[in-house]
Image (cartoon, rainbow, N blue to C red; front, side, top):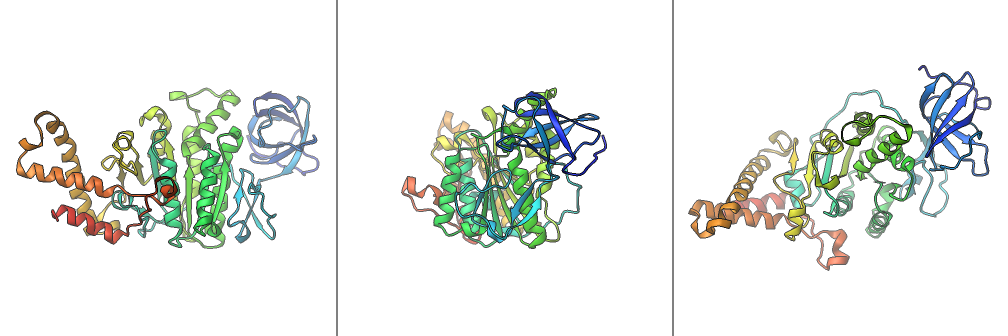
Length: 443
Protein backbone atom coordinates (compact mmCIF):
# COMPACT_ATOMS: atom_id res chain seq x y z
CA UNK A 1 0.00 0.00 0.00
CA UNK A 2 1.28 3.45 -0.85
CA UNK A 3 2.44 5.53 2.11
CA UNK A 4 0.67 8.86 2.53
CA UNK A 5 1.31 11.78 4.82
CA UNK A 6 -0.55 14.67 6.30
CA UNK A 7 -0.18 17.63 8.64
CA UNK A 8 1.04 16.47 12.05
CA UNK A 9 -1.62 18.28 14.06
CA UNK A 10 -4.46 16.85 11.97
CA UNK A 11 -3.25 13.25 11.74
CA UNK A 12 -4.88 11.32 14.58
CA UNK A 13 -6.04 7.76 15.12
CA UNK A 14 -7.93 5.63 17.62
CA UNK A 15 -6.88 2.31 19.18
CA UNK A 16 -9.46 -0.33 18.21
CA UNK A 17 -7.69 -3.57 19.18
CA UNK A 18 -4.80 -4.78 21.34
CA UNK A 19 -2.54 -7.83 21.24
CA UNK A 20 0.19 -7.57 23.87
CA UNK A 21 2.27 -4.49 23.05
CA UNK A 22 0.93 -4.47 19.46
CA UNK A 23 -2.11 -2.29 18.83
CA UNK A 24 -4.41 -1.78 15.87
CA UNK A 25 -5.11 1.88 15.19
CA UNK A 26 -7.76 3.23 12.86
CA UNK A 27 -7.08 6.49 11.04
CA UNK A 28 -9.14 8.58 8.65
CA UNK A 29 -8.30 8.75 4.97
CA UNK A 30 -4.58 9.35 5.60
CA UNK A 31 -2.07 6.93 7.07
CA UNK A 32 1.25 7.98 8.66
CA UNK A 33 4.35 6.51 7.11
CA UNK A 34 5.97 3.38 8.53
CA UNK A 35 8.35 4.28 11.34
CA UNK A 36 6.37 7.34 12.40
CA UNK A 37 5.97 7.96 16.12
CA UNK A 38 2.46 8.51 17.53
CA UNK A 39 1.75 9.86 21.01
CA UNK A 40 -1.24 8.74 23.08
CA UNK A 41 -3.33 11.40 24.83
CA UNK A 42 -2.78 10.01 28.35
CA UNK A 43 -0.81 11.07 31.42
CA UNK A 44 2.26 9.07 30.35
CA UNK A 45 2.15 10.35 26.74
CA UNK A 46 2.77 6.73 25.67
CA UNK A 47 4.55 6.45 22.34
CA UNK A 48 3.61 4.13 19.50
CA UNK A 49 5.54 3.36 16.31
CA UNK A 50 3.85 2.47 13.01
CA UNK A 51 4.89 -1.09 12.06
CA UNK A 52 2.79 -1.66 8.95
CA UNK A 53 -0.61 -1.31 7.32
CA UNK A 54 -3.54 -3.67 7.89
CA UNK A 55 -6.16 -2.04 5.67
CA UNK A 56 -6.83 1.22 3.86
CA UNK A 57 -7.40 3.08 7.13
CA UNK A 58 -5.78 0.79 9.72
CA UNK A 59 -2.19 0.31 10.88
CA UNK A 60 -0.39 -2.04 13.26
CA UNK A 61 1.57 -0.06 15.84
CA UNK A 62 4.13 -1.00 18.47
CA UNK A 63 4.22 0.38 22.00
CA UNK A 64 7.80 1.64 22.28
CA UNK A 65 7.72 1.67 26.08
CA UNK A 66 6.25 -1.84 26.25
CA UNK A 67 2.91 -0.60 27.58
CA UNK A 68 0.35 -3.39 27.18
CA UNK A 69 -2.49 -1.69 29.07
CA UNK A 70 -3.60 1.11 26.76
CA UNK A 71 -7.42 1.13 26.73
CA UNK A 72 -9.42 0.58 23.57
CA UNK A 73 -10.63 3.91 22.26
CA UNK A 74 -7.49 5.83 23.25
CA UNK A 75 -6.69 8.63 20.82
CA UNK A 76 -3.16 9.12 19.46
CA UNK A 77 -1.68 11.80 17.25
CA UNK A 78 1.38 12.07 15.05
CA UNK A 79 4.37 13.10 17.18
CA UNK A 80 7.37 12.61 14.87
CA UNK A 81 7.58 11.34 11.30
CA UNK A 82 10.81 9.55 12.25
CA UNK A 83 12.47 8.62 15.50
CA UNK A 84 15.29 11.11 16.12
CA UNK A 85 18.24 10.27 18.37
CA UNK A 86 21.11 12.45 19.67
CA UNK A 87 24.55 12.11 18.07
CA UNK A 88 27.84 13.96 18.23
CA UNK A 89 30.74 14.40 20.61
CA UNK A 90 28.44 15.10 23.56
CA UNK A 91 27.11 11.51 23.32
CA UNK A 92 30.54 9.92 23.83
CA UNK A 93 30.82 8.15 27.16
CA UNK A 94 27.04 7.99 27.56
CA UNK A 95 24.52 5.14 27.80
CA UNK A 96 21.27 5.20 25.81
CA UNK A 97 18.11 3.12 25.44
CA UNK A 98 16.36 2.05 22.26
CA UNK A 99 14.85 5.49 21.59
CA UNK A 100 17.97 7.54 22.33
CA UNK A 101 17.17 8.47 25.93
CA UNK A 102 20.02 8.45 28.47
CA UNK A 103 20.23 5.68 31.07
CA UNK A 104 23.33 6.72 33.05
CA UNK A 105 21.72 9.32 35.36
CA UNK A 106 24.41 11.79 34.34
CA UNK A 107 24.04 15.38 33.22
CA UNK A 108 21.68 16.20 30.37
CA UNK A 109 23.15 16.12 26.88
CA UNK A 110 23.59 19.62 25.51
CA UNK A 111 24.29 20.88 22.00
CA UNK A 112 23.78 17.41 20.53
CA UNK A 113 22.93 16.96 16.90
CA UNK A 114 20.33 14.41 15.83
CA UNK A 115 19.83 11.74 13.20
CA UNK A 116 16.82 9.73 12.07
CA UNK A 117 16.40 5.99 12.63
CA UNK A 118 15.24 3.90 9.67
CA UNK A 119 13.22 0.76 10.43
CA UNK A 120 13.14 -0.60 6.89
CA UNK A 121 15.65 -2.37 4.64
CA UNK A 122 17.91 0.33 3.25
CA UNK A 123 18.81 0.60 -0.42
CA UNK A 124 22.00 -1.35 -1.08
CA UNK A 125 24.89 1.03 -1.72
CA UNK A 126 28.36 0.27 -2.96
CA UNK A 127 30.35 -1.37 -0.17
CA UNK A 128 33.98 -0.36 0.20
CA UNK A 129 36.19 -3.12 1.60
CA UNK A 130 39.66 -2.81 3.10
CA UNK A 131 42.35 -5.38 3.84
CA UNK A 132 43.66 -3.44 6.83
CA UNK A 133 44.04 -5.81 9.79
CA UNK A 134 43.00 -4.65 13.28
CA UNK A 135 45.13 -6.29 15.95
CA UNK A 136 43.18 -7.63 18.95
CA UNK A 137 46.02 -8.94 21.11
CA UNK A 138 44.21 -12.28 21.48
CA UNK A 139 46.41 -14.94 19.88
CA UNK A 140 43.74 -17.42 18.78
CA UNK A 141 41.62 -14.71 17.14
CA UNK A 142 44.47 -12.87 15.42
CA UNK A 143 45.74 -16.18 14.04
CA UNK A 144 42.58 -18.06 13.01
CA UNK A 145 40.02 -15.27 12.49
CA UNK A 146 41.85 -11.98 11.90
CA UNK A 147 39.90 -8.77 12.32
CA UNK A 148 39.79 -6.80 9.09
CA UNK A 149 38.49 -3.24 9.02
CA UNK A 150 34.91 -2.96 7.76
CA UNK A 151 34.09 -6.67 8.01
CA UNK A 152 31.69 -8.66 10.22
CA UNK A 153 32.97 -11.07 12.86
CA UNK A 154 30.82 -13.48 14.85
CA UNK A 155 31.47 -15.11 18.24
CA UNK A 156 29.23 -18.16 18.39
CA UNK A 157 28.52 -20.50 21.27
CA UNK A 158 25.96 -21.94 23.67
CA UNK A 159 25.03 -20.58 27.09
CA UNK A 160 27.84 -19.98 29.57
CA UNK A 161 30.86 -20.60 27.32
CA UNK A 162 32.25 -17.04 27.49
CA UNK A 163 30.75 -15.07 24.58
CA UNK A 164 30.15 -11.90 26.59
CA UNK A 165 33.54 -12.14 28.28
CA UNK A 166 35.28 -12.41 24.90
CA UNK A 167 33.29 -9.53 23.39
CA UNK A 168 34.17 -7.39 26.42
CA UNK A 169 37.86 -8.33 26.14
CA UNK A 170 37.87 -7.45 22.44
CA UNK A 171 36.28 -4.09 23.14
CA UNK A 172 38.82 -3.47 25.91
CA UNK A 173 41.79 -4.34 23.67
CA UNK A 174 40.71 -2.91 20.32
CA UNK A 175 39.47 0.38 21.78
CA UNK A 176 43.03 1.14 22.87
CA UNK A 177 44.31 1.02 19.28
CA UNK A 178 42.57 4.30 18.43
CA UNK A 179 40.75 2.60 15.57
CA UNK A 180 37.74 4.94 15.89
CA UNK A 181 34.56 5.40 17.90
CA UNK A 182 33.38 2.25 19.71
CA UNK A 183 29.74 1.24 20.11
CA UNK A 184 28.52 -1.47 22.48
CA UNK A 185 24.96 -2.67 21.91
CA UNK A 186 23.42 -4.94 24.54
CA UNK A 187 20.42 -6.85 23.19
CA UNK A 188 18.55 -9.16 25.54
CA UNK A 189 21.50 -9.86 27.83
CA UNK A 190 22.02 -9.29 31.57
CA UNK A 191 22.23 -5.70 32.77
CA UNK A 192 25.03 -6.79 35.14
CA UNK A 193 27.29 -7.51 32.18
CA UNK A 194 26.69 -4.09 30.65
CA UNK A 195 27.42 -2.43 34.00
CA UNK A 196 30.70 -4.36 34.33
CA UNK A 197 31.72 -3.32 30.80
CA UNK A 198 30.88 0.31 31.60
CA UNK A 199 33.08 0.21 34.70
CA UNK A 200 35.92 -1.58 32.83
CA UNK A 201 35.93 1.02 30.06
CA UNK A 202 35.73 3.83 32.58
CA UNK A 203 38.60 2.40 34.60
CA UNK A 204 40.75 2.02 31.48
CA UNK A 205 39.92 5.60 30.39
CA UNK A 206 38.30 4.25 27.20
CA UNK A 207 34.74 5.40 27.85
CA UNK A 208 35.42 8.83 26.35
CA UNK A 209 35.56 7.27 22.87
CA UNK A 210 32.64 4.87 23.38
CA UNK A 211 28.86 4.92 23.21
CA UNK A 212 26.59 2.29 24.77
CA UNK A 213 23.05 1.34 23.75
CA UNK A 214 21.11 -1.10 25.93
CA UNK A 215 17.89 -3.06 25.47
CA UNK A 216 18.42 -5.75 28.07
CA UNK A 217 16.61 -8.99 28.95
CA UNK A 218 14.27 -7.30 31.46
CA UNK A 219 12.89 -4.96 28.79
CA UNK A 220 10.06 -5.42 26.33
CA UNK A 221 10.39 -7.06 22.92
CA UNK A 222 9.96 -3.57 21.47
CA UNK A 223 13.10 -2.25 23.17
CA UNK A 224 15.11 -5.36 22.34
CA UNK A 225 14.08 -5.32 18.68
CA UNK A 226 14.75 -1.59 18.20
CA UNK A 227 17.99 -0.94 20.09
CA UNK A 228 20.32 -2.48 17.46
CA UNK A 229 18.82 -0.43 14.61
CA UNK A 230 18.91 2.71 16.76
CA UNK A 231 22.60 2.24 17.56
CA UNK A 232 23.35 1.45 13.89
CA UNK A 233 21.81 4.78 12.88
CA UNK A 234 24.14 6.58 15.29
CA UNK A 235 27.12 4.59 13.99
CA UNK A 236 26.31 5.56 10.39
CA UNK A 237 26.19 9.22 11.43
CA UNK A 238 29.77 8.98 12.73
CA UNK A 239 30.82 7.18 9.54
CA UNK A 240 29.17 9.59 7.09
CA UNK A 241 29.23 12.96 8.89
CA UNK A 242 32.46 12.70 10.87
CA UNK A 243 34.30 10.43 8.37
CA UNK A 244 35.31 8.18 11.27
CA UNK A 245 35.83 4.43 11.45
CA UNK A 246 33.47 2.70 13.88
CA UNK A 247 33.87 -0.45 15.97
CA UNK A 248 30.41 -1.91 16.57
CA UNK A 249 30.07 -4.61 19.25
CA UNK A 250 26.77 -6.48 19.61
CA UNK A 251 25.83 -8.82 22.44
CA UNK A 252 23.67 -10.69 21.36
CA UNK A 253 22.43 -10.67 17.76
CA UNK A 254 20.38 -13.85 18.27
CA UNK A 255 18.34 -12.01 20.92
CA UNK A 256 17.47 -9.39 18.30
CA UNK A 257 15.89 -12.07 16.09
CA UNK A 258 14.24 -13.60 19.15
CA UNK A 259 12.63 -10.23 19.99
CA UNK A 260 11.43 -9.85 16.40
CA UNK A 261 9.91 -13.33 16.68
CA UNK A 262 7.97 -12.29 19.80
CA UNK A 263 6.56 -9.31 17.91
CA UNK A 264 5.66 -11.57 14.98
CA UNK A 265 3.64 -13.83 17.31
CA UNK A 266 1.80 -10.78 18.66
CA UNK A 267 0.99 -9.76 15.10
CA UNK A 268 -0.49 -13.22 14.50
CA UNK A 269 1.89 -14.09 11.67
CA UNK A 270 2.26 -17.70 10.58
CA UNK A 271 5.62 -19.05 11.85
CA UNK A 272 8.12 -20.57 9.46
CA UNK A 273 10.60 -23.44 9.89
CA UNK A 274 11.84 -23.89 13.45
CA UNK A 275 9.07 -21.70 14.85
CA UNK A 276 10.71 -18.45 13.77
CA UNK A 277 8.99 -15.47 12.17
CA UNK A 278 8.39 -15.58 8.39
CA UNK A 279 10.45 -12.38 8.09
CA UNK A 280 13.55 -13.91 9.72
CA UNK A 281 15.84 -13.22 6.76
CA UNK A 282 14.46 -9.72 6.16
CA UNK A 283 14.82 -8.81 9.84
CA UNK A 284 18.46 -9.90 9.83
CA UNK A 285 19.33 -8.19 6.54
CA UNK A 286 17.72 -4.96 7.76
CA UNK A 287 20.23 -4.95 10.61
CA UNK A 288 23.33 -6.29 8.82
CA UNK A 289 23.01 -3.99 5.80
CA UNK A 290 22.89 -1.01 8.15
CA UNK A 291 26.50 -1.77 9.19
CA UNK A 292 28.22 -1.56 5.82
CA UNK A 293 31.31 0.50 5.03
CA UNK A 294 31.58 3.14 2.33
CA UNK A 295 34.00 5.76 1.05
CA UNK A 296 33.42 7.87 4.18
CA UNK A 297 34.57 5.28 6.68
CA UNK A 298 34.22 1.72 7.92
CA UNK A 299 31.98 -0.05 10.42
CA UNK A 300 33.69 -3.14 11.81
CA UNK A 301 31.11 -5.29 13.54
CA UNK A 302 31.67 -7.92 16.23
CA UNK A 303 28.53 -9.90 17.04
CA UNK A 304 28.06 -12.59 19.66
CA UNK A 305 25.60 -15.33 18.71
CA UNK A 306 23.80 -17.55 21.20
CA UNK A 307 23.22 -21.14 20.03
CA UNK A 308 19.94 -22.46 21.49
CA UNK A 309 20.47 -25.92 22.99
CA UNK A 310 23.98 -25.94 21.45
CA UNK A 311 22.31 -26.68 18.08
CA UNK A 312 24.44 -25.00 15.41
CA UNK A 313 21.89 -26.05 12.75
CA UNK A 314 19.20 -23.82 14.29
CA UNK A 315 17.61 -21.80 11.42
CA UNK A 316 18.34 -18.42 13.03
CA UNK A 317 21.96 -19.36 13.73
CA UNK A 318 22.41 -20.55 10.13
CA UNK A 319 21.03 -17.26 8.77
CA UNK A 320 23.37 -15.22 10.97
CA UNK A 321 26.34 -17.44 10.10
CA UNK A 322 25.90 -16.66 6.39
CA UNK A 323 26.21 -12.90 6.96
CA UNK A 324 29.64 -13.05 8.62
CA UNK A 325 33.17 -12.91 7.22
CA UNK A 326 34.72 -14.68 10.22
CA UNK A 327 33.20 -16.95 12.86
CA UNK A 328 34.90 -17.66 16.20
CA UNK A 329 33.39 -20.81 17.69
CA UNK A 330 33.36 -21.26 21.47
CA UNK A 331 33.15 -24.88 22.59
CA UNK A 332 31.74 -26.33 25.79
CA UNK A 333 34.09 -29.30 25.43
CA UNK A 334 37.12 -26.99 25.23
CA UNK A 335 35.87 -25.02 28.23
CA UNK A 336 35.47 -28.21 30.26
CA UNK A 337 39.15 -28.98 29.60
CA UNK A 338 40.00 -25.70 31.36
CA UNK A 339 41.23 -23.90 28.22
CA UNK A 340 40.33 -20.19 28.06
CA UNK A 341 39.19 -18.50 25.94
CA UNK A 342 37.30 -21.69 25.03
CA UNK A 343 37.82 -21.32 21.26
CA UNK A 344 37.46 -24.39 19.06
CA UNK A 345 40.54 -23.81 16.92
CA UNK A 346 39.44 -26.10 14.09
CA UNK A 347 35.80 -25.03 13.93
CA UNK A 348 36.74 -21.34 13.89
CA UNK A 349 36.66 -20.19 10.27
CA UNK A 350 37.38 -17.05 8.28
CA UNK A 351 37.06 -16.17 4.61
CA UNK A 352 39.70 -13.50 5.30
CA UNK A 353 42.42 -16.01 6.16
CA UNK A 354 44.08 -15.70 2.74
CA UNK A 355 47.53 -14.63 1.59
CA UNK A 356 46.00 -11.51 -0.01
CA UNK A 357 44.75 -10.30 3.37
CA UNK A 358 47.08 -11.68 6.06
CA UNK A 359 50.21 -12.18 3.97
CA UNK A 360 52.03 -15.29 2.77
CA UNK A 361 53.82 -15.94 6.07
CA UNK A 362 50.63 -15.97 8.15
CA UNK A 363 48.68 -17.96 5.56
CA UNK A 364 51.31 -20.72 5.32
CA UNK A 365 51.54 -20.99 9.11
CA UNK A 366 47.75 -21.20 9.42
CA UNK A 367 47.61 -23.99 6.86
CA UNK A 368 50.30 -25.96 8.71
CA UNK A 369 48.66 -25.46 12.12
CA UNK A 370 45.21 -26.50 10.87
CA UNK A 371 46.72 -29.68 9.38
CA UNK A 372 48.46 -30.56 12.66
CA UNK A 373 45.35 -29.87 14.75
CA UNK A 374 43.22 -31.98 12.42
CA UNK A 375 45.73 -34.81 12.75
CA UNK A 376 45.69 -34.36 16.53
CA UNK A 377 41.94 -35.00 16.64
CA UNK A 378 42.41 -38.24 14.67
CA UNK A 379 45.34 -39.39 16.83
CA UNK A 380 43.44 -38.78 20.09
CA UNK A 381 41.05 -41.60 19.27
CA UNK A 382 43.92 -43.94 18.42
CA UNK A 383 45.88 -43.02 21.56
CA UNK A 384 42.84 -43.72 23.73
CA UNK A 385 43.05 -47.33 22.51
CA UNK A 386 46.75 -48.17 22.02
CA UNK A 387 48.55 -45.36 23.85
CA UNK A 388 50.90 -42.66 22.60
CA UNK A 389 53.95 -44.92 22.79
CA UNK A 390 52.68 -46.99 19.86
CA UNK A 391 52.67 -44.04 17.46
CA UNK A 392 55.36 -43.50 14.86
CA UNK A 393 58.02 -40.89 15.64
CA UNK A 394 56.49 -38.51 13.10
CA UNK A 395 52.98 -38.90 14.51
CA UNK A 396 54.26 -38.54 18.05
CA UNK A 397 56.07 -35.33 17.11
CA UNK A 398 52.96 -33.85 15.48
CA UNK A 399 50.84 -34.87 18.45
CA UNK A 400 53.16 -33.07 20.87
CA UNK A 401 53.29 -30.00 18.64
CA UNK A 402 49.49 -29.89 18.58
CA UNK A 403 49.34 -30.07 22.38
CA UNK A 404 51.82 -27.20 22.61
CA UNK A 405 49.83 -25.16 20.09
CA UNK A 406 46.59 -25.68 22.02
CA UNK A 407 48.31 -24.57 25.22
CA UNK A 408 49.93 -21.63 23.42
CA UNK A 409 46.60 -20.26 22.15
CA UNK A 410 45.14 -20.24 25.67
CA UNK A 411 45.44 -16.78 27.21
CA UNK A 412 44.71 -14.81 30.37
CA UNK A 413 42.16 -12.03 29.75
CA UNK A 414 42.18 -8.52 31.21
CA UNK A 415 38.46 -8.35 31.94
CA UNK A 416 38.50 -11.38 34.27
CA UNK A 417 41.73 -10.43 36.01
CA UNK A 418 39.89 -9.24 39.18
CA UNK A 419 38.21 -12.66 39.42
CA UNK A 420 41.11 -14.97 38.55
CA UNK A 421 44.04 -12.99 39.89
CA UNK A 422 45.94 -13.79 36.68
CA UNK A 423 47.32 -10.76 34.89
CA UNK A 424 45.83 -10.19 31.44
CA UNK A 425 47.99 -10.66 28.36
CA UNK A 426 48.18 -8.67 25.13
CA UNK A 427 50.23 -10.42 22.44
CA UNK A 428 51.14 -8.55 19.28
CA UNK A 429 50.51 -10.19 15.93
CA UNK A 430 54.24 -10.34 15.18
CA UNK A 431 55.03 -12.03 18.51
CA UNK A 432 52.13 -14.44 17.99
CA UNK A 433 53.40 -15.52 14.56
CA UNK A 434 56.94 -15.93 15.90
CA UNK A 435 55.63 -18.07 18.75
CA UNK A 436 53.80 -20.37 16.33
CA UNK A 437 56.91 -20.67 14.15
CA UNK A 438 58.98 -21.75 17.14
CA UNK A 439 56.50 -24.49 18.07
CA UNK A 440 56.30 -25.79 14.49
CA UNK A 441 60.10 -25.82 14.34
CA UNK A 442 60.20 -27.95 17.47
CA UNK A 443 62.00 -25.30 19.54
